[in-house]
Amino acid sequence: MQMLMKRMTFSKDHSAGYLANHLARLFERGLAGRIKPLGLTTGTFPALLELWENDGLTQKELVERLDIEQATMANTLSRMERDGLIKRQKDPDDGRVQRVVLTEHARTLRDPAIAAATTENEDALAALSGEERALFIELMQKVIATRRER
Image (spheres, helix red, strand yellow):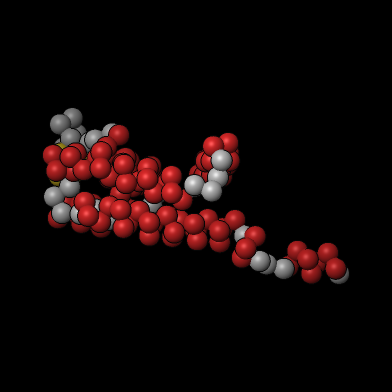
């Protein structure tokens, strides 16, 4: 009975899901303050990161890479288009496919936005040694890869 009670006890302070969610909200808040002066939001930032690496992805490719819902991506891309960050262009080889292409304005935001994210990461992980930072990143990557396999 004692063992059953111990397993049923839940502590948010020892819950990986709770802690990951809390940490994500703290990172988001910090990043939001740093990229707002650039006219960017944390909602569009992940898509921009993907497009800065691989301009011309399809909406479907962005959905797969970012692990988000199709409807959420459609709304995000509409906002990005409205804000002058992307244009949608028909694929030259397949007219049924639309490519998401960065505008020149979005391209100019890459370096300052990456610098803002880098600074946020450094500040957030300042209490960790270099070895701890590397291990922290490695473990997060491992958990993400495991969850993606499901």
